[in-house]
Length: 386
Figure 1: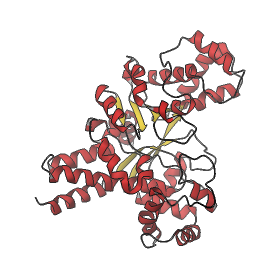
Figure 2 (figure 1 turned 90 degrees about the vertical axis):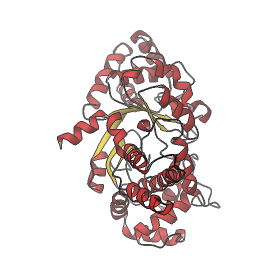
Figure 3 (figure 1 turned 180 degrees about the vertical axis):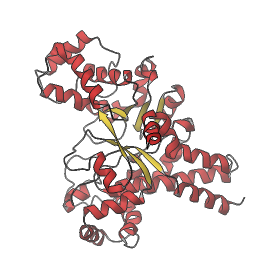
Figure 4 (figure 1 turned 135 degrees about the vertical axis):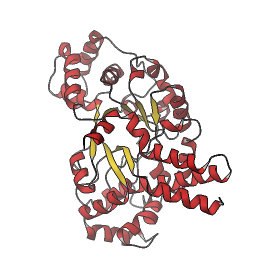
């Protein structure tokens, strides 16, 4: 088979893949202001972008104009002002309908733990896209709810377990933002209930935002005891985190815990630590990874990070995600760039006779959705019950 035929076969296969977006947030409910919309394309800076600078002058901004414009019936690379006017004229409901459908996602796995007042809930994502949406429960949110309710220190360990059990009854997994709250270079061994109560008592004297590594570690261990998958934010994010302390290799001792090894652990995003995450996915049978979020922000360079994710990690341990939040351009673009980047990587492997076409097609299906079904057993159960 010549290179043209190889590219055609792989392109057609990857373009038609029904994806499971295993880590995503809701799309916007209402049309944003121009400033709100533009600032959504800057991840690291938590402040409004300076007016003399254009946040769309970035790999992500150029990718929006190249790939998203045609979905709105505009030419590729259309100027930003025309794009914005068209988007505003259509309205958020229509914009969401177009981009969520164009993503080709057959199931959304939605983190409901951040700024939910402005974005669609899992149920609303289902309504907007026509595809099912499942919930991921954020552990720090549960702890902060108990704190706000005035839970007594002696009651906190059992209160957390009970709330976790109730909130995950219909969820498919849990998530921690340990990276944002204290980083990974902390003791993540399982604390005793007495130690947890003591740490909670100290927390009650301070800020309502949970940053105590002892209490976060407690939540993580309780989450793995449920048997549900545990998602862990790794690497790239906004400047509230210390990127140096978000290296997944710092999680090695936590991953060695026998109880933790009974549940799937999903390392999210990973950039610029995708190679370290690949090592952990090879070292631990329950560890998986994705390079979502980074794919959008790297734009035209996203094929490189997708290829790096295929270096060391077993192919059965790599998942697709967009980590899109807010403008539904990000939900579509995550899938669009991932499909293009994966096709490029697989075509190179096959053209150099390192891989067969059949193997490339099989691995594309695994990463697109098959691995997610194995990592999240509840997804398969829900699909079977439909």
